[in-house]
Image (cartoon, rainbow, N blue to C red):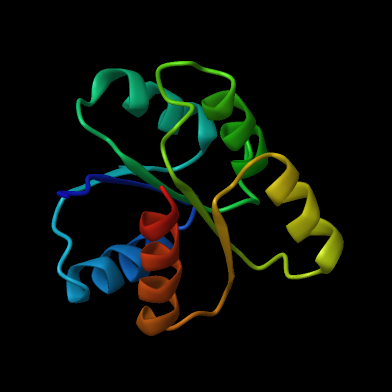
Length: 125
């Protein structure tokens, strides 16, 4: 399956790290957004996005709000979402899972961790 990733993070550096990690894993199709509202616009205007990697803490629309918006929209509700965040406390992970993220990575992470989480999501979906 050819994946087209929407990479959402308010840090350009973090988006670069995620995209470079994905490239190293053999993925080459990306759309970027700096926060949740921009991500929702890209989802509506860019064809073929079928995987979202998002940060949680962002201005305007947070990653959690983005997840809830995607899950409540019939057109996008089945897109896998991987949350990559510094928020590692158990309560936050529970909240994210309740919002229906498919998987969760705490920063900093290695490309290997990213690969494992993506593979886990793709096996389930």
